[in-house]
Image (cartoon, rainbow, N blue to C red; front, side):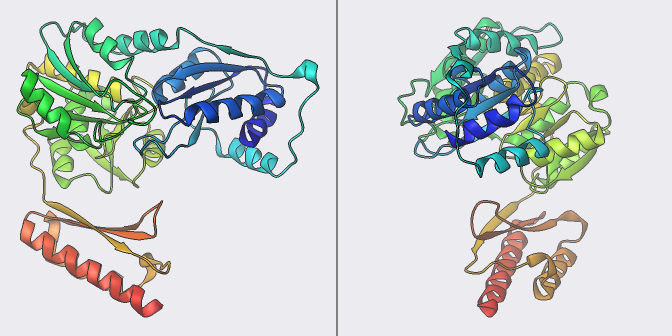
Length: 421
């Protein structure tokens, strides 16, 4: 409630538009929604309630309805007992840092309501799902349809449960559904983009041409080809890049964790491959800085600024299907030219925070590993953003060599941590 009030206070100084609130399907969303609504109202800001909606749908409606901001209540791919709050600006992008700082400053003040006559009013936008469905369908180019296509769809019992099936059905596909009956507790529970095994089984059982797995809030996509193989974010990025290389402004953005095989495949398309830090916000920053349109992460966050303002699982899936149609290829054929390099990651727990970027022992060990790999491999050490861990990743042509090097580096990091205690 205090956060809603603080955000409302800042936004009230900048304009008169309403603030949208949407959520995924986890049970605590009702509680968060009511509290945010009360806080915004106390600050004198009008509220528009969207109900369960995918994160990218809330971003779209924030811009489309000329709202001042949009609020998403979701913990994305996490279990039901987690929840979080994310803001979009009126442009459907992340709030400017300056506005975030102003909201943080307001949080330190005592919560005082405006006079009763100035309280914000709330109403529900009942046609929000239909508006977003039409938006998704409008993002298909090349005048393609999906008549005759059999698609298995896993909605993760999340925010796309009432939207994704309609998008694909209304474009002509025959849809086989999984995990589209949310009960507040089953979101992301052994389903969705983080757990595609059920979708693999459904693809084989239904003899589907393709499988689509979304996460709890609909901004992530993992796919399954007609043979039942998992198609990750690297594969998806490559499939979409083949749709129209002329519109990509000469490059595609991945992250430091993107497979070296993707980099080689993108370069074979006569495009450069740029790497951002891990996290969709860093992919977005690099896209904007370099005036590019397509980027993504191995985990399935795909951003195409030529189609929308943020990562969108449904729109990314539509683009892959469009690429299949335009190139007249099955999904396995579309991504089959990527040769993935063996990539192994180990997590090293930290009892004490250390600066790996300036530790000479670790830097020497990294250099030795890189010399061993030569030009056909990579080493990445990075601290986790959410846990007391260092993630050690090694990638190369030889699986045994990669395994040996990642073990050696992990051991070295552990030794350095022990010495520092």
